Image 1 (cartoon, helix red, strand yellow):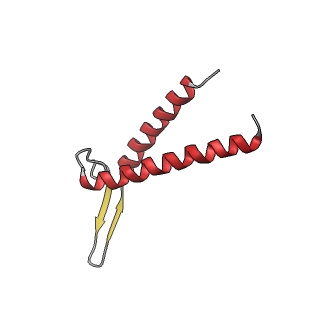
Image 2 (spheres, rainbow, N blue to C red):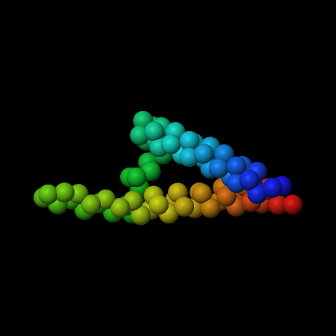
Length: 79
């Protein structure tokens, strides 16, 4: 395969993944049944003039899921 073909394929796949991620973000605001963003261990500090929120456990769960998905894709596409 030539380099331009590989770059083009990479850009198409990246675009599709961004579209899927965007749809998931939009859908998650309407369907928050997964509880992401409100898990035990997420840090919320409320003060007089503002709120600090860091979704630590949510980040760990999302990272674990993405790692698992990418590992499976890598395993299935080995030659």
